[in-house]
Amino acid sequence: MDVEVWIRALKAARAGAEMSQEALAATIRWSPSTVAAIETGRRRPTMEFAIAADQALGTGGLLASLLKAADQERGPSWFVPWRGYEQQAVRLRAFEACLVPGLLQTEEYARAVISTGGLHPPAMIDELVALRMERQQLLHHDEPPHCVFLLDETAVRRPVGGPAVLDGQLTRLLELAEHPAVRLHVVPLAVGEHAGLGGGFVLAELPDSERVLYLENAARGHVVDEPQTIALIERKWDSLLGESLSTGASLDLVRKLKVTP
Image 1 (cartoon, rainbow, N blue to C red):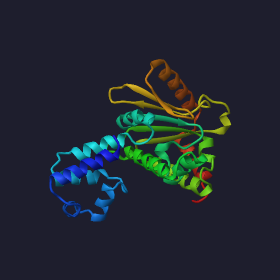
Image 2: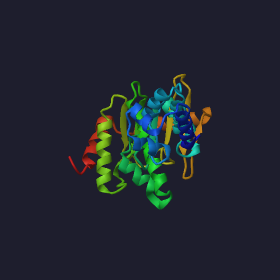
Image 3: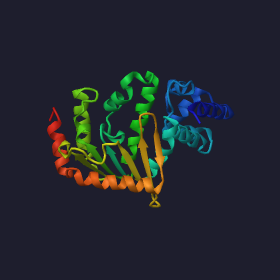
Image 4: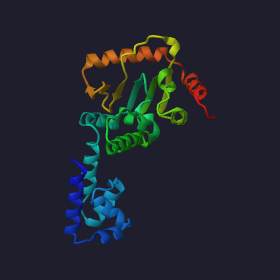
């Protein structure tokens, strides 16, 4: 379901309640221009707006549930299943060989990654960046998943977006490393060849102890639940973790790479 369906539902609910845009704005204490922008598709509705509109229009949570469904379908269709698993996970283990993982990226770093090569129009770039930033909210849930991130040293040295953007990204890594649910390790270049040179991956453990795997290639991503493949990736994980620096040594390396204190 796209957001246009949600907009039609809002308009229908407002018409059924015989409430003008201005009256709805006054009731929910949002500006009339914001309500108009949302109804014309110029501004994407927030969950806060949807909940307030449900209460004002007596729709019993319909608008909030429709918006949640629309948000889950944002981004590439092949990524939708993984978003569901990511949000449910009690533990995430991620390895990246070339880039900082999406859950740790600054907005500037994410924009540089997504816009490179001119593959997407500006509006899609904005949407994909916004989606990536929203995904990071899972780290701030009341009970966030326990997350362990392994990064090849190349990922923290590559000047994605330029030196200033990389410096901001390194600052973000140091900040997030203080989060009680986040652990960060770097696999040093001195290791040479290692088990992760074939590409990155994410292992998710769900509340029922089920494990799922996310793999991404140059064209799309795949969710895998085949036990043999997961077992292989877990062996790779164990090998990479054994080659990585301790958390303290990893953060010392990140600090040394920063340009600004």
